[in-house]
Length: 162
Image 1 (tube, rainbow, N blue to C red):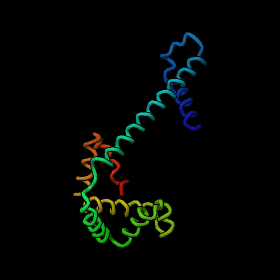
Image 2: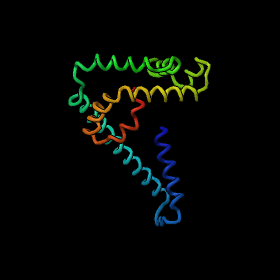
Image 3: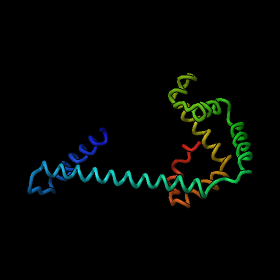
Image 4: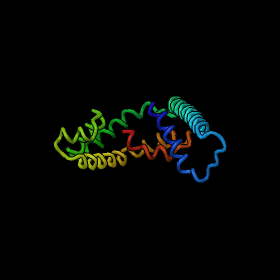
């Protein structure tokens, strides 16, 4: 329901922004209905494209880009070594965030520190992990990005993959 209300609101905003350029020679009510109708169709079309993209991406990841079987133990070892290089508080915050799925606010409350400290420590941990695991990230995610043509969107979400 919120999405429908957003589309209607956007139609009114668009009408207001272009009021000086519009020349509605028929009913304004009919014009607004048609505007909302077209916006809904565009939204449905956009969802369809997104759905097809996600299905294609999942299929590509499943079929073409699996890591060799002998890589898993080495990757686990490298991950553990990277974790060991983190300072104790930084490591603890990283574990709470990534393994226990706590939000930054929850971590801050639990440890009695500010949210900004949690953000800073997570940034430090993610930088260390990226550097330590760069070989695997470039190889695995680089192949995925080349296959889908969305290297830039993957680079933006690299932090969220841990």
